[in-house]
Each structure stands twice: as structure tokens, then as C-alpha cells.
Image (tube, rainbow, N blue to C red; front, side):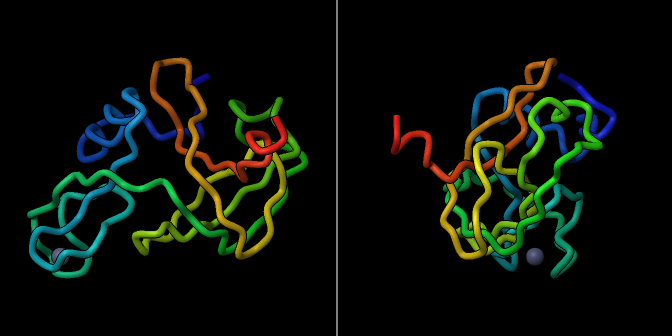
Length: 136
Ligand SMILES: [Zn+2]
């Protein structure tokens, strides 16, 4: 479901959202200083280069912080509460905010990427503890 809390695609974020339609998780990486850039931008915030290259990410992450939301302010996630809003450190060294919808992880737990489908065909990158796969 689309939601006012999900950014509309456009401008520099368009390639990110188009990749999510294919189930591909990409981020910009600077062609000059080699650092990752998150969220999508027109210039590298580290060296001001305009040479930003869309790069596939592993989808592996470690929990940096967790907050359990028992009531959602995000309409597209209202029926998924309670769920965990997380800050994760991707294996590539990028810290991003996301969510875990299938359990409550602890700081330091490993997570893997999964997708939450939006009504317009885009997908939100969220994470899973993998516990459902292990017990299924
Ligand atoms: Zn740079």
C-alpha cells in the first residue's frame, strides 16, 4: 500500500525505486572516494563528487538499535504492529533505518534483507531475523 510516510520516487531516488521493483537492493557508491552514499543524492556528501554509481548490496546486516512500535504511524504498516523499527549496519558499512516485521531482534543480531510490497509495485527494503525460515 502506498502511504504518505513512503517517499515518492523521483529525481535522484528514481533508480533506487526502479531497482526495488526488480527485487534488487542498490545504493550509490562514489566513483572518486569509493564510499557508499545513503540516502540517494546528486553529489557525494564526503567529497562532493557527482560520480555516483548504483551498486548492488549484499542485503546482510547487523542490528545497531531496536525500537518496538506497538502502534504504527505508518498507514502501510498499521496492521503489522507490533514490529521493530531498526537501525542496521549493512555489511558494506552503511547504517540505515528499516524495520523487522517477523520478530524482535536484539542489538548485534544478524539480519537479512527481505521486501515489503507497496501498492504501486515498488518494494520497501525490510529485514528478517530468518527465524521463520529456520522453523518452517
Ligand atoms: Zn566521494
